[in-house]
Image (cartoon, rainbow, N blue to C red; front, side, top):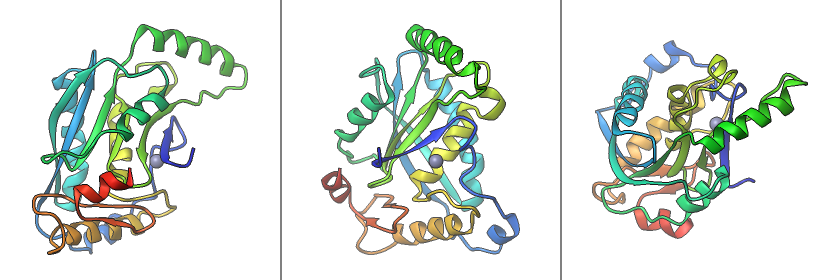
Length: 224
Ligand SMILES: [Zn+2]
């Protein structure tokens, strides 16, 4: 499964060790907006979405960036496992007005039963590995997070808000690294790319962790 970067409970709440003095020394330029077309799974409300984005934007303020949510759709989950959400997202086009696509996964009775059993299985060895979210590693333009979990061990390590911040860094082109410096540079590069004359008007471009640039929605879609 190399196409998506996954975030697991516990192990992946930070993408690198932050260094605020290093970050403060960098100039991230003027405020820029990233339009995030957001799909709400049944059971996830616009209020939930706004609350998550408020928290995310507190983080993005550090980079003079703002994520603006648009409700792109409301739907039942396209399949039970996370993979089916990814496949669904993989087939969507980046429409005008969307810079990124985010799917907010809810919590169904099926999930609760599934959590109960996996908890049972892993309780013996004290580990509960669960995917909290993922972003596509080919274009860093779309991803999902589990936005409504309230299960036992999970909240000790992560929450939907921290998952969104984490996956949000991937949506800005960052990978995982020991220190955040590389990620700061990536975000600064991305903001410069947004002002580049070859970038589609009104599009907040994407960068991959391998440094590949996507300056038009068409290029993103053709890669998908
Ligand atoms: Zn991650």
